[in-house]
Figure (cartoon, rainbow, N blue to C red):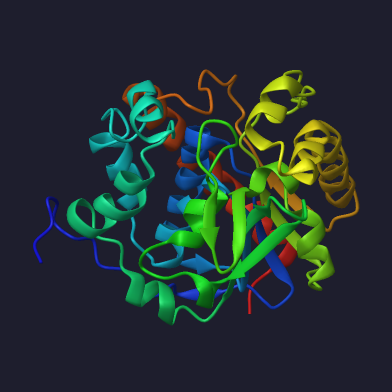
Length: 300
């Protein structure tokens, strides 16, 4: 089958960090294209992590990194993010989703910008994408083997409450994993990792505010009281996980990469120029961080 754009074929990385080294990814909607730029720097350097964990946009943008497709995420920004089928209020009216999930996760990778699933599948790493189980209020972690070319698990991880429908997958009712585990550092630690490269999509000093529209949660999710509770306490979880990340940095057990310039991009921003600038900032700052990461952790 032909693609709209010349396919970018995935490449095998030149080197792998030692076991116990994790790449931990925050979400953030289209702010996640900052992380995509950081991944470009990692691909330029030919380095891969044995363990990658992400939620929401962090998990989605990591797909192209794991498949070794340099430039793929940037091409998505250049060609499709400004398309109303990707992100628009029209989607919300027509499909009950601000992001056009069918367009983003099916049409683009299957018809327009080739995603090298076979290279992704061959990569000998552990990859986890988190989604929120609406019934239990807990994060469900989907392993790399659960990621099919249809990308259901990653779609679930990106489904923002209220502006996206619940995704049914593997017997679960799922929404955005960034609600229950906004920075999935605790899961990485519990899996035995001892050094964490953490890519955040907010400036230093950012803090989440409490969700104040409980009536909307009750309107949409009265059948899911544990989901409502998780949304209402998300700001507290974010603060706890961010403090843990900073503590690990001070102990020499982590390295944080995050936007250094003041952010001018929201989580649902579709401005091509702004997003390309953010992506390229991530590329530049990711490249600058590599020496520091190698100095702290080293490679096999």
